[in-house]
Image (cartoon, rainbow, N blue to C red; front, side, top):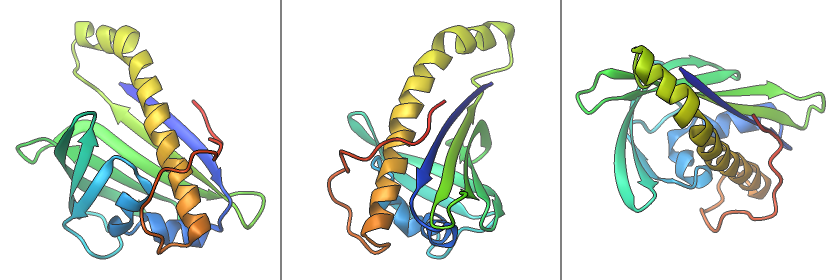
Length: 173
């Protein structure tokens, strides 16, 4: 199983960060590849199902998600559902933690993915795909966390615009 992490320090108090990220309608404002979200028009709760429309390279793709766990002001874990509505072996966990400065928050995204259980599949994932996935996740998640910092700096109601270019990624792998 591949585990991919990106962490960033957001110069915004934890309650404001949490209230922004837990609202599904805000996802297109800070995750550049999410174009729209449907299914829930309130803060996420365990058991909610969401439909995201994502731009994956050259096409728009529909992704079904199940909210597996919400720990208020701490973390939210989303599972990706297959086309038949069953959970796949892929999750995304977004965690927030108060920084030493009360005006700042650590935000971490952890993606877990398993392509299969057989030794051949695990070997291919570990030695061939994991290094590639790490680069892709670092790029996309780092970009999303930079956009989150920019949106919160502008104010929670900011309209989506161009991606912020000069913000530094405060995390890594």
